[in-house]
Length: 396
Image (cartoon, rainbow, N blue to C red; front, side):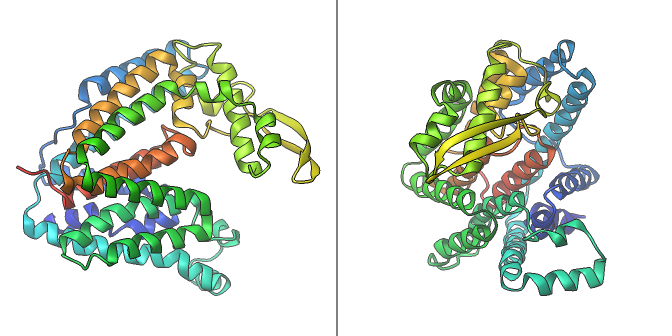
C-alpha cells in the first residue's frame, strides 16, 4: 500500500492526465482512498475557516441561484475536493527520506513520458493516430490536429515545477533545470504557444525570485492573487473590446473574444454586485448561449465580421466568474481563502522555490483561462501541490 500511494502521489500518472485532463479528478479520488486505507491522518491546511465560510455561503446562494440544484451539487463536489486536499496534505508531510527518493525518481519518469507525448505527436501525428486506432479503435481525439488538449499542455507545464523539485532532490546538474523547463515549453508550444510560454515564464521567474528573495516572492503571491480577485471587475469596465482590437490590431480573435466575454460578464456582475447569481451559475446563465455579431471595420487591413456566443460555459477568467456567481461577498471570502492557502503552502524559505513557481504559474490559467470551479482543474492543482510538498517538505 505504501509503494502504491507513493506512485499515486508522484507524477507517475501525469501521461494519463496529459491525454485526458478529466483523469485528474479520478487520480485524486483514488489517491484519497489509498490514503484512507493507509489510515493516514488529515494534514494542516491554513484556509479551513474561510473555506468553510465560503462553502456555506455557496450553499446559501442556492436560494437565489438561476439553477439551485446545480449550485448545491457543485457545493457538495467542492466539499469533497476540500477533503481530498486535507487528506493529501497529511500524506505529503509524513513521507520518510527514502520514500521521497522513490517519489523523486517516479516523478521524473512520469514527467519524461508525458513530455515525449506532444513531441512524438508533432513528429509523427498520422502514424501515432493510426497505431492508436489499431489498438483502441476510433475515438474523437484521433481526428483532432493534436492528441493532447490545451488543458493537457497546461498540466504538463505546471507539472514541470514539481519535476524540477525532483531533479533537485536527486542532486542533478543545475544545467538540467532550464533544459527541462525549455523542453516542457517546447512540447507545449506545439499545441498552445502563448499560454505555454506565459506559464513557463511566470513560473520560472517566480522560482528565481523566491530563491533570491523568498519573503518578497511569497508576499507577491499571497497578497497579489487575492488583490487580483477583488480588483478584476475594473478590467472590463476600463477596456472596450472593439476599441481595443482597433487600437491594437495585433490582438488575435481569440483574445478579442475573451474581451467580449468579460464585457458580457461585467454587465451582469453590476446587476447583482453583492451576492451574485449563484455558485456555478455561469454554465447555465440566461442568454449565455445567444449569439452576437461584431463588425470590425479594419482588422489587419480588411473588415471582419465576428460571431460567437455571449458566454461559453464560464468567463475564462476566475475572478470575474467569482464576482458573477458569488458577488462581492463571495469574492472577498475567496480572497481570504487564497491568502490563507498561499501563506500556508508557500514558505518564506529559499528551499520552497518550487512551490512558489507552481502557484505563480497556476495563477495564469486561473486569471485568464479555466473555470474556477472545474473539478479537473482543482484536482490537478491539488495533485501537483501535494507532489511538490512531498518532494520539498517543510523545514522543522
